[in-house]
Length: 147
Image (spheres, rainbow, N blue to C red):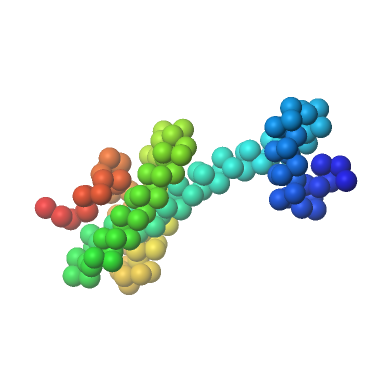
């Protein structure tokens, strides 16, 4: 089976075969079109993961700020977990760092929806735009509303 056909039938086998061809410097046998497509998909996936993690983080920060009576150590732990995962992603892909501000702004609306649904607060009670500076978002010791 040709490698380009393999891509359509068994993506895992295709990646294994492509890796082997690259290691053996058999570049003329590569399925360049699908290889480029997969590399672009990897890049989008990292950006999407960053936005997804920020949605969850922002939702929990809003819950923390707007429902102080419900704060708990599990909320604190959940916020820390998202921060750690975001930092891991940025460490693995430092080129995402310049995208962080854009990602946080893109994530905010859905983060606010999550907070609204989980708390019962009307969405209109939450800020329309990202209310937090970028620097403290990943600071383990920063929580909105804390003195």
